[in-house]
Length: 282
Picture 1 (cartoon, rainbow, N blue to C red):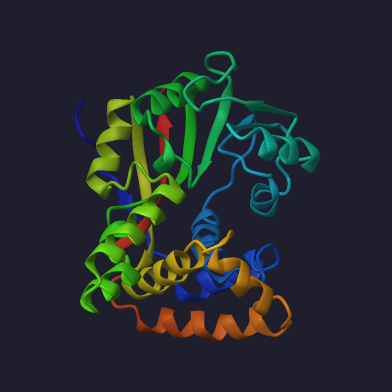
Picture 2 (picture 1 turned 90 degrees about the vertical axis):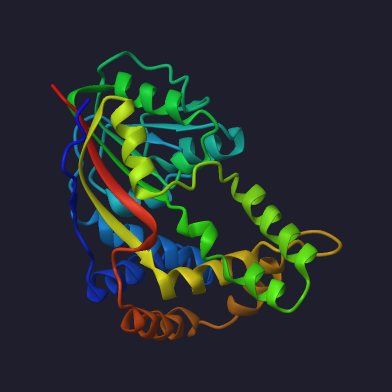
């Protein structure tokens, strides 16, 4: 199959800050999550999804509702039974399946859209998942998704700093724990992601790079630190959250930091994440 030309869009600092204003309502005191989700939100504002929608890796449904409040025919899929219970209680979905993403109990050619927010990079059988997406989409149906790229690993700042300090084994273990926590199996380059979509029969329309160098570095520093395991139980993030959540000014204060990071960026194309729009040809 011939590789089509894929259009690349870029975001503006204003759009990303508007994204933060929206998502910080959901995650006011979890800065790595509000940081990443703000970029995704900003990218998704370029699209309108409607009709019959499949939310692949749906989570509890709250982020979907924030993004697409008027969607009224949505089926969720998640492999975690506890998360599925929350999704069913959310009122977002007309049905939620507890299943693997390559074994969706839905008819062929049944969805106008498949939405996969930050889920494809965690799939052990990516080729099977993309084939299942193709099967579930109607001819002409669209896939809208966010993913991480190879930069997500290459720009991981905390392990690099610990290596510089001379603690190689600790740095390696920290990075391995971080990747295991996220179950990150597909941190692919943009070209490799494009190849995977094309091999599944999906035609790429455009993509939006998200989180360039400075935003990625700070996000990865925060997120890696957040998920460091405490000696007894839990994560360092539990301690950080308990401190931040007592300060009602934190969301607005972190916005100023976010704004400064956006001002620092010079290359908005080389990023640790991407939003893709693809479609199944009719």
